[in-house]
Length: 225
Image (cartoon, rainbow, N blue to C red; front, side):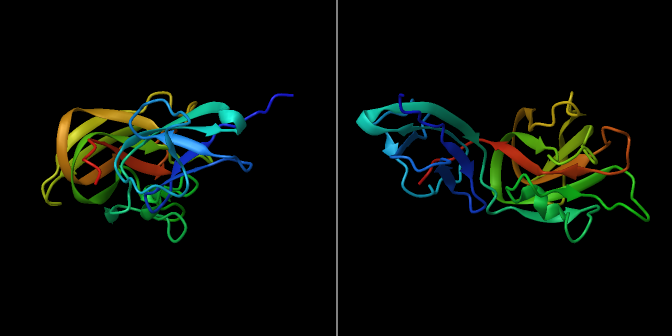
């Protein structure tokens, strides 16, 4: 029976480094960061890769006799190592704090307060990116363990100084109830940003809550040193 080589996994760790792996021990994983096809002559993965910028990663397992396995591809956005929550209108503490929306872990969530005195929308969280960046858009990953709080209508505002905010995008996530995958929304034009304010104007089922597994950005890459 011919050797079956698995598809490697590609993820970004909480420290911003790129991590690759496989469910079983493999001879080698070869990868590229420039969009080209990975071959036996491409870089070999030996340890997590420090590359915080947006990047297209392509990788494949190389077996005995230079046998190439199926290719894996991942478009990774800007690492969140410098990010901080500057303010949040509501959060369910301690387990569903706003910080969970920028921790790089899709299994944790930000959820607005529920129970007694549940606040009504709109809800918002303001994020400090830690540096000025040119953004093309933003991303929203709804919670993956249920639909409560999934955002329907949204409003994004941006700022350079954290005081004066300008609207960058307003709209509604289409079909997010049936397809709770990452939503990628482009701005009408690139914008220079340090602070991003994510506003949840409504919940898909008309409830008072808002939640998010991850909030991210689509950034213009800077040269990697």
